[in-house]
Length: 253
Image 1 (tube, rainbow, N blue to C red):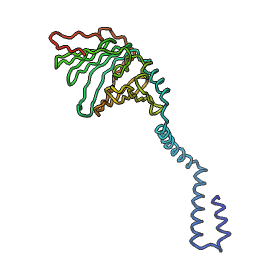
Image 2: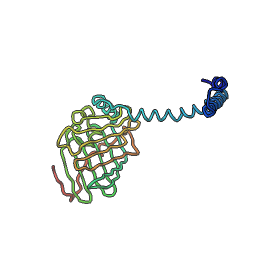
Image 3: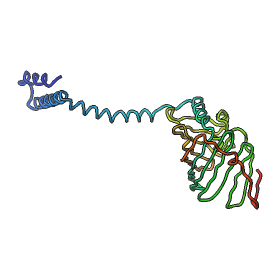
Image 4: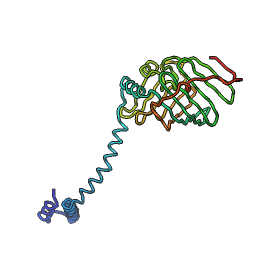
């Protein structure tokens, strides 16, 4: 009902309405008149456009927050594709652990398929982990100790090997989930009961792995953030070889 119709109704029913009700109808009629004039001038249209401009992002956020997770098979294929595009990678890292052994470490890392990686902690203490597909060395400079371990040629249950192992075999060792189908964020659960961690999440940006979060069996959470990332650079084979310095205690596991 327009303001003109309301005014006409008010005039026709002036003898049948109480003064209070007549006042209410008149107020409504005047308000409708003002709105009609604003619409003609385009003023209200500007207000509506502004409101829509605020509402649209809010709707997008709501849709994003409620996006359904991808099924496990789709999640595995998507993660496989992302990791397959990483033939080699170098980056700086910041590793923060919260729990019984809290602390933050920084350093550099290099990975190259198949199964080569170098993880060098530089602060606050120095430690080096080097793997070349058949063996893995863990060298602690302060302790003057080097530990040698055998490494499975496949991905296995070691988080670091996810970036250097065979991506097509990941789903054999992990249950892979993608909580939000429209985001490159994945959570992996090891299938082996002997795994040293309960879950591992990986986040990608622009096709690059930018963060990993590890929840271990001791209740600790370790967050690893990568920066200065270089994708698919040429890395010399010497980066993945290790010869224990003289006088270092060697432990074979």
